[in-house]
Structure formats: C-alpha cells, structure tokens
Amino acid sequence: LAYLPKLALRFLRGDANAGEPSQELLLRIDACNRAARGTVVVDPVRATYFSVRGLVDALRCGDGFRIGRTLCFVGTTLAPLAGPASRLAKPMLARAERIASEVRDARLDGMIRVSKAQVAFVAGDFASMLELCDAGARLLAEDGRGVRWDWDVAQMGAMRALEELGRADEIQR
Image 1 (cartoon, rainbow, N blue to C red):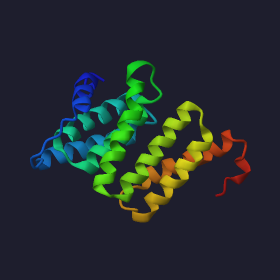
Image 2: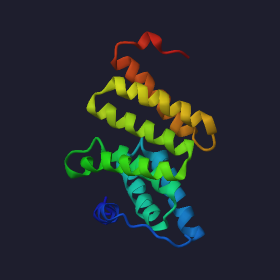
Image 3: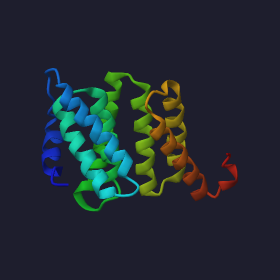
C-alpha cells in the first residue's frame, strides 16, 4: 500500500510511457497481475499490494490492455475500503472503459463489466451486479484466451447476486 501515493499521482496526471516497454517490465506487470489474482482470497492485503504495484508499472509501460486490466483489479480491491482509497474505484473503472474503447479487446470489456459488478456488490445493487456479471461473462466467452479466472468471478458474482435477490432457485449447475 506504500505505492498508493505514487499510484494516485500517476493516475491523476495520466502518466504513461510513450516508448517501447522492456520485456522485463512486461513480465513484472504480468507477474504482479497473477500474484494479485492468486492471493486475493487468502491474503487480500498482499493482493492489493501486487495489484497496486502492477498498476504503477503498467502506467509506466503504456500498454493499454495491461493498464485497463490492472485498473479493473485495483479498482475492485479498493472499492470495499473506507476513505479516499475507495473513492478511486469508479474513476479507475471509467478510465479502463476509455482505454477499452481504444484497445477494442472483448476480454478487457468483459473484465470491466465484472469489475463494475463487484463495485455494485459493495453498494448493495444486486440487480446491476447480476446484469453486469452476465454481460461480462458473455464478452469473456467470446475470446476465451486467458480469462478463465475472470469468467469464474463473473459466474460466482452472478450466483451471489441471484442469492441476494431471492432468486437462488435460478442457479443451475
């Protein structure tokens, strides 16, 4: 979390590197992404560290897909927190949407919807959560490359939304 001030400054200024990123930097961003996803359930604080660290590097790198993917993850890890950190979630997802319109990648569009569903969960808006999870899962299924984790999160979110809406009988195997 020590990277949050650095991240906030880069995020608010819109810093991004226009040059060609090094292979080492790309590998570090991807490793942080995998580490964050792999630890989010068992160690959310460590997952937040890896996601924020990855976002700082992604912003430095300038790769649209990696920036958007990491904005989604960081936004959803910050959303349930109290204070100023939680207020960064929606602007991060809005920026990810702007990037997605340039990148034109169904995977990123799906990730954004699943991330917005998680923010809707925190707000208690389960109808929107269900709609976003279903839309995100459909988009993720279009391409299918490297999105199994995101698709699973969308499915779990949809089941949770159905349960919260009193419609658990609609859950199918």
